Image (cartoon, rainbow, N blue to C red):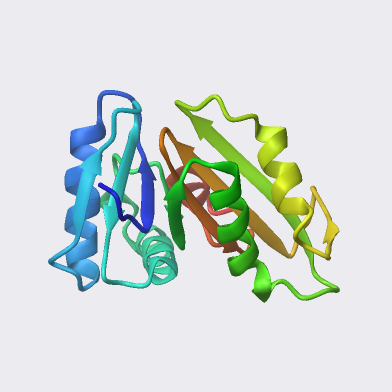
Length: 174
């Protein structure tokens, strides 16, 4: 799948159940036409929905708060704003375009999750950080530059720290 705006993780060997679950949830949230694919990476599913991916995160959090049994196999959902080839220049340019939301007095952190790629994490961090004039705060940033490398494709988002969904965290009520 070349276009996706959600990355879903599950336990190994429960990818099919998680895929069915996220598709049912997306339909319940209002998108019966969404598409998903189990990737070659164990525990990773990608999905494309017509819904705002940040709205999906909010709806998942609300659902788990009221009906936690509805989410059994989906462990984590990440909103993705841009998908580019896994190439340093493409990643840097996409991050630079998305980072216009980061104000000069805001802080940021770059989080990279790398799967099936030999590109060095520090090379990605250095390429992106050079483009952003704000200060880095690894502990309590205003923004997280999320770089999800999935083999030949990379998903990128600029998110606030609470704009990710983790079923474990939500079920614990943190």
